[in-house]
Length: 178
Image 1 (tube, rainbow, N blue to C red):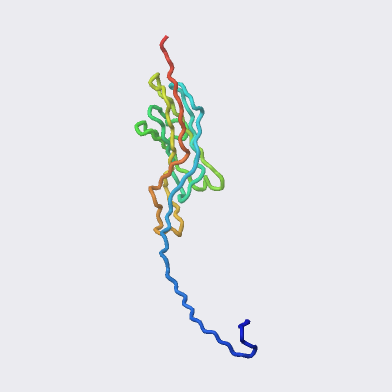
Image 2: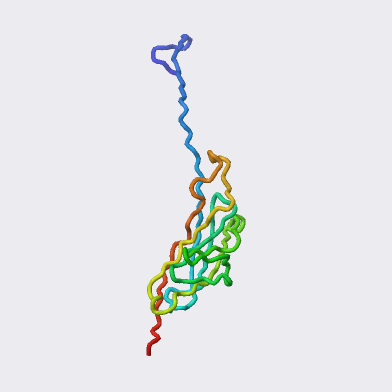
């Protein structure tokens, strides 16, 4: 090291104080929310009264769960026959279609997806004329899969997530008067 005015052979000493202080900050809580992603499709966007629409709800991915139950929303006035498609039950009062069984994380992993189907019938008669919105679909956690670094080891939130968006269809009433 070169120090001005010092010649080789001189004994130069430097003293300094070093204070290394560490004040630990607070580690934020890790939260784990359930999320789901997917899509929806159906046969058309315009129907006559009483016509049937095949609706497909596809779950493409979800996180922080190993198993989910899927439902979809049908507009008021439409009916669903549980004998066809993947329907476990249909509640006409709430418009909720519940699909049979559950979907496992292994079914949607590695670019997989699961498509569930049902058949909805448009309202009958001229009073059924109008626009109707299907969806969104909803995934509900049956079995959580919380990562080990989560602060409390539990899912945060209500364990449900909407996916697939909505689809608006138009129904045209048929005039039966001659």
